[in-house]
Amino acid sequence: MSAADATVIPVGDAYDVVVGHGVSDRVTGLLAAGVSQVLVVRPDSLAALAEPVVARLRASGLTVHEASVPDNEVAKTAEVAAGLWAVLGRHAFTRTDAVVSVGGGTVTDLAGFVAATWLRGVQVVHVPTTLLAMVDAAVGGKTGINTAEGKNLVGAFHEPAGVLCDLDVLATLPQADLVAGLAEVVKAGFIADPRILELVEADPAGATRWDGPHTRELVERAIRVKAEVVAADLKESWLREILNYGHTLGHAVEQVESYRRRHGEAVAIGMVFAAELAQRSGHLSPEVVALHRSVLESVGLPTSYDGASFEDLLTAMRRDKKSRGALLRFVVLEDVGRPTRLEGPDEAWLTGALEAISTP
Image (cartoon, rainbow, N blue to C red; front, top):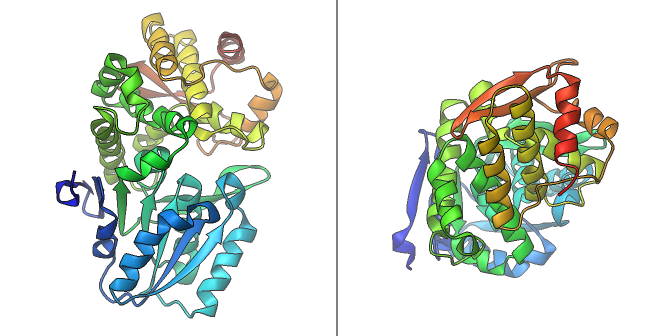
């Protein structure tokens, strides 16, 4: 498939997400006029994957600097961000210059945060290289770094100038990472687009292939769900919170495991927990709870967890950004495509839901 076959998904009037095969050469078209310097932020391991993007930027007459950052969540620290600010300072980046991220969700979060805070905001273009980043992290303008107290507790809203999703790079992903990214795709199905669940149920093996028969449709549908939500709610009021379905426990699992578990795996566990919680609170039928397990398990995602105590997980969940004071708040479902908010759930519901997911 040629780059001419790209799909352009608008995020309101703010920016576009370009999806297709072999579309890396479109990166310069997403930058605003007047840019003279670009900082390309990418992990060491993705130097070769970033090279076509760097070459295209240089061929357009731009001065390109490259900055390597660690892989995975260890990149999202104040120390790494400060190192990138130092690079921008040494090269005298101005407000008309830009940052381009090439990498997974940790890189888009980090580079977006650095762009948001340098001179109080310079433009950023994201070139996500993982399924997770394409359908979630790169879209929506949420940026952040982690602290010892929790994930993404320091951050800013900073809309990108554009997002470029070249589906060909998914061929380079380890299979476990591709499968983990499906959690965010399935999440979009549960909160807004049941067709996603139907496609996965019809061919779970195909859903786990980068070149599966429905992969592009799944990616585009998941992006459209997020694009429609964030276009209507840029700063995370209730509507945007629905995108955090499964994330309250998911982030807690990541934290107690020191971010050694893949984000998508943790979110899959978190969605089953949220479904069990919704059933106990009278919101959700047992049939939809079972659907969570069947869809997630069909693609190889985890649906059970016993790696930490209830007390440790509860402490971590209280740090969730949706919490208000001591009041825990969860996104739960009343049915597929019908998310709602559950505030201050009974502790018996919480312990019961955790017990329900503690055994396979």
